[in-house]
Image (cartoon, rainbow, N blue to C red; front, side, top):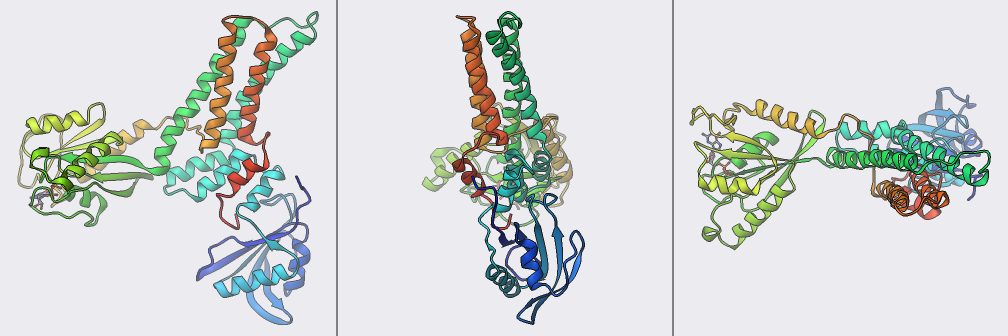
Amino acid sequence: MENNFDTIVATATPIACSAVGIIRISGNRAYDIISTIFSHKIKPKMINYGYIIDNGNKIDEVIVLPFVAPHSYTGEDVIEIQTHGSPAVINTIIELILSKGARMAQRGEFTKRAFLNHRIDLSQAEAVIDIINSKSQKSAQNALSNLEGYLKNKILNLKNNLIELYSKIIASIDFPEDVAEVDTKTIVSICNDKILEINKILDNTKSHDFIRDGFNVCLIGKPNVGKSSLFNTLLNYSRAIVTPIEGTTRDTIKETINLNGYLINFVDTAGIRDKNVADLVEKIGIDNSIEAIKTSNIVLFLFENSINEIDENLLKCAEGKEKIFIQTKYDINKLNISNNAIQISSITGYGIEILKEKIFEIIKSFIPDDMGYTTNKRQQACLINAKLALENVINTSNFTDEPDLYAMDLKSSILALGEITGEVFTDTILDDIFSNFCIGK
Ligand code: GDP
């Protein structure tokens, strides 16, 4: 692994017409290069105002922010140039910097250097891409807590406890006269505790996936009960076609809104009626609706006046799901409903805010207080390996109490945890992670 890196350059902002464009240079030659193309002498750690000059010609009026190693994003000398956001200007300046000896950065190379220069660990590097890809405030907040070291600290804590246990076992094997043997009961108890902690992180991952990709909320009910109208009202625009003709919605339609920082994927389903009266397309729509119900976190069950046998059958499809009962068309059906239904009118907007509050209340109940989570499949695989190794220790304890047999599995568990934070890594692991980044990050 090379550690005396060359100097790289890339735009940190998209190449598109915008107010400001940011070009970033990182590496040993960053200061040499900027001093040959900037109109003034660069003052480190200061905001420098001036011009980028090529052969005496002014290219753009810019602001230059010079960071000094190791106090920069990459841990190297870094120069950030703020230009006007013209693609032509940005490209010209990058070409000029390349001509002075820098090379184009690869995807994620700035963050990769931050990792290789020990500014951040791998879980934090992965949190950077999570923040960039966040589609909701909550998702970004969780990723930010990992960037600040939340997951890293949790993993380090787990690992340190196991290292302590491992060291005691090894010491008792190497120095049996001086160090007492750790009894099997203690080993099993520590392993069980750590398995519980790992399970908690893995469980939280499921919640985090919903925070990142959205909670699924599907609308079900007989044809014409008002599903598409409510769907449109919740989205605040006419996405689904609304008519008085039964079977108008023939397929599921999914659209996402942001509700108090959480993404909600509303799914409008085809009204499920007797398959015998439905044509082929509608039958497929009905099957898709049943699938949508299965994958939903919350089911909004719509009815108009009363719940009849068709409704009861429909409700069976949603057994075990969190449900909200909704009585529709309140503007024309002012009935008092006893089963805790929320009364709404998509025409007047009556009850819509109460419905949103109810949805939010249920969503909050899905989110654990302690959101230590893994961000991706790689980290989950490492955690599962760490857990399997601990389970091996417990299984082994059932038929032997040879301490060196426990030690092998404990070491595997420690190594698996170390892979999450990047103490153990290969070029392939790094390539996989950083190829998901954009150029310039
Ligand atoms: P879906 O088949 O369940 O999706 O029902 P639609 O949303 O297509 O609505 C069926 C019919 O009921 C349409 O004519 C709508 O205009 C009407 N409708 C829907 N919601 C309301 C409402 O809140 N009040 C009134 N008066 N009519 C509604």
